[in-house]
Image 1: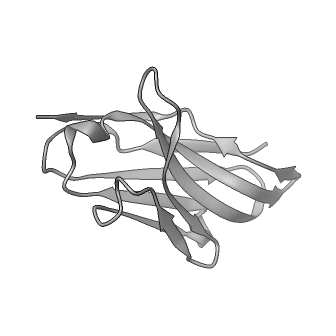
Image 2 (image 1 turned 180 degrees about the vertical axis):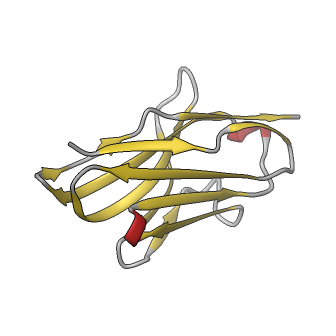
Length: 120
């Protein structure tokens, strides 16, 4: 079984920064893609950023230039550095891992989410 545990959410003022972390646990040999999504109540979950095991990155339009995703393959951990935060960034942020090879083959593993609140 593979589990994801997020940390680093909290309350920050507009213009501030936060860093989210997500660690995958279990018997893991490799993870193809790791990423972050977010969801506001009443809205659909949206892509924030993703990163492949080769280091290729992609971002949602609303965060490009402000957020940076990175990962440590040896630690099966992904990070999201969020700068210049805006009130509209307020949401629950979810970590995702796809194509996980370990004691099985897992698609779309999700963390429990961490709340980010940006005050104006």
